[in-house]
Length: 219
Image (cartoon, rainbow, N blue to C red; front, side, top):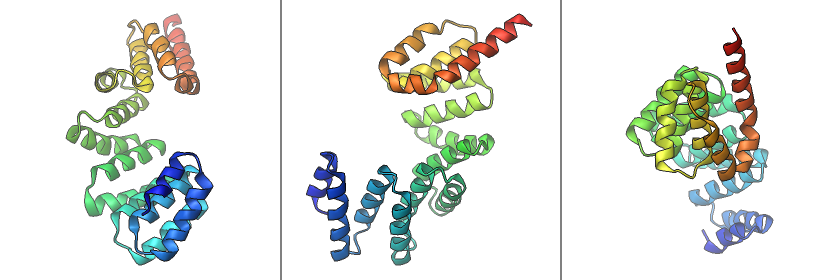
């Protein structure tokens, strides 16, 4: 694949990069990496339908290719087609046991609120990659969904150790502090500074938990 295509994409010339990659694939229809890259471009642009058509076409040529299957599962996940993502990643995990596929399957089960299943795969990934930021955050998030803030704190503490500048890790650690009756405000202030967009998107979770804690104290 021509490096100038990636440079155009990185420079924000998205339509030009997509068209050049389409033209390239017409001349080089066996370049699997190019199919995956084009699908990633289209998914980023939220053109999910075209991305799916592209990947399904590629899979008719290379039906056993793991990279194409993974890209298809990721597409479904990004499009919030979680049942299709679950089917795709489950098959990939069955065939390869790949950790990245297990991570995405855990994410998918978490979105489907099947948190016991999500935990099984998320823990497998975290245990094999204990210093992987996203794996620790995912396990922590699943534990919060299961109501186990004490255990969740362990994983958010790990995440904060791995990357002290990660706004989500700091915010979620603050949530566990709040529920466990410990000092938490400094963590929320720091999370807001580190990642204002994330804080704004997730502050309702903080408001809900604060309301729950107040109601609990009044009983």
